[in-house]
Image (tube, rainbow, N blue to C red):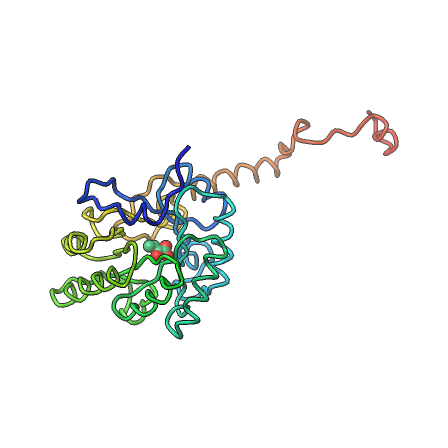
Length: 281
Ligand code: KIV
């Protein structure tokens, strides 16, 4: 049986030191957590992408700490061997340090082993406060979806030299503040590669090219459950959405045409009961 994945184990996984790439994927409930854990992923992220792929919102700004805790709990109860990371929603780590720590603790008490938050140097006090409370923190830089309005849309970040320099400084600051890994989302491949070489904690890319220490993807994108409009870095490995629609359509057709349920799918009444109900046996 696979061993429990731990924060120190992930922290040590630099490809430059010969480690295998880290595999991280989202899940939001127990059945899919079992699916991805049985596929031997290293990290399950209960992402705030929950808002979009499960709860039907247009962006990630509509979920709070209670929503995330509810879904972290569902994933944790499947007892994954993978490391379980809970995403901190927007405005749960931007105000007072005490609120930040309390919110991170809510996710840990729901079953997370670590939390993730978005942003660079401005988030250093939050990272320090949470790690001081013995809760491991994963950073997240580049196209950070909680900043959708500040960025003016979902745009690749760090395309210009100055912006790329800012992101390199952000990554160094997060590593120095105590993050055990950093997600790099929506940045040019060469920049991700440079940051990966510069920081001594693993980088996990999404739309950041092949040069990171690992890759992360939103499960529903990979399985074809998230509609047709997906970012260019998404590779679909299944079309479960259309397969599920087909299955439900077949069942509906069987119901309408009297083929479901069959006798074998029914609880047969005893001869006595049929007689008492006035039915021929
Ligand atoms: O919320 C999420 O799913 C994420 C990943 C895309 C990294 O933050």
